[in-house]
Length: 276
Image (cartoon, rainbow, N blue to C red; front, side, top):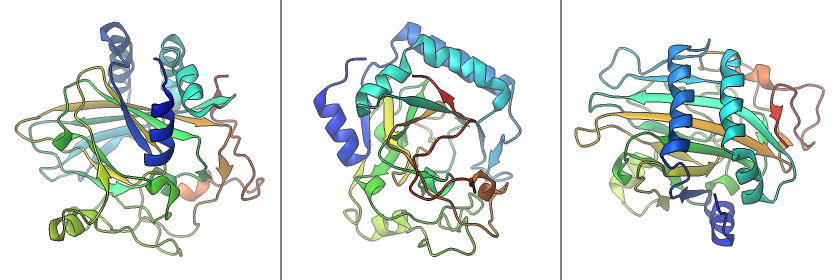
């Protein structure tokens, strides 16, 4: 859990780092308890991306009924202090969890996206702790466009089209449509400055929530992936409403906007648990 100055710099500049051995066996077992509990007790937003296709995979996130289970794990493992040290933030809030299951040796890449397309929050103090319970080669891991958390805010993806991963979330917005990163890479492998990591069991990927990221397919060489993500906010987060009006998502993301807040105000939400 030792945080180095290099880790702080790389996270701030690149938007992602790999933390080796963050979860040795006993700590990883606690994370696995949270994952297994979430799978056994899915929330109202659980579902299957690309349902009905060979690339179908399970996803669940932000289940309020499971919050205390995940909070106990976060506290037992001291993750709030770890995140606070990465940022130099006095206060830390826990947003919630996300679970992914891809199995059977075939599962599509997750489309390139930024989590900030789906949340009314921006700022340097946002991150995801992404941990899988299998050894993940770089080719099967999550990829990040270096520095993209400090760049353009793109429209989100609908997660509905395998043929068009840029199929837009928001139907009326001035946010630019997502670039087709994979098409660009096929034409020119150096078109984007992309970082990724080989992850051993117990390693964690830490990424800024506003980074443009995607990938993590399963293949015959890495046929199954079970991933738990914990999300956190710190002091330097600010309210930035998402677009309103029609969207192509499974629920009304615009309901997350808070009309009592002004854009640019420090973002504080009673639904997120303050850990310190």
